[in-house]
Image (cartoon, rainbow, N blue to C red; front, side, top):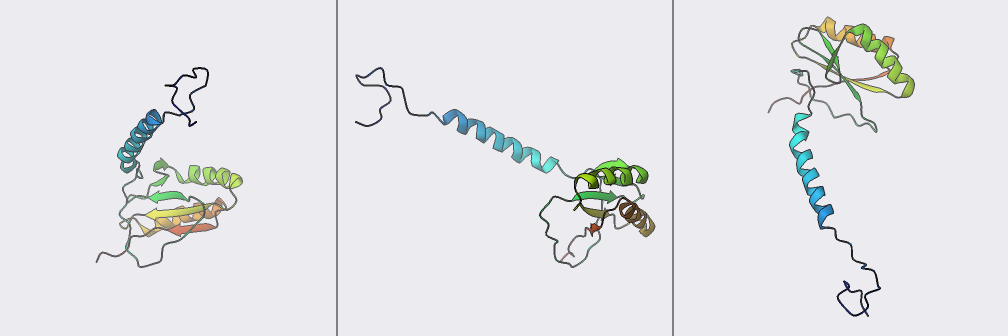
Length: 139
């Protein structure tokens, strides 16, 4: 009457149970791997962000991160880049995504002029949606 596992008299009937144990094993291993590697996937440029009180921005898409180091060097998504290369690359990205959002992570100790040079190159690339990343004040 019920669906058996093939232990009875009718041997021509296929087994209808699915063994999910190997699937669960693989999923647990993948979960552990992602939990261990996720903290290692941080931005590659060490930046001490300025503190400010502001509400977090919400966006439907993942923004690009442009970092400005203490020495004024720029990095796109953690990879060092010159300002000329930054403008050219952002123009190409903007063609594929007209609503591109860019967040600038300027080091607190960086020269104001260095951050403004990066902002000028963003404007030259046609990026109109730019946000500045800060940290909440220490309590």
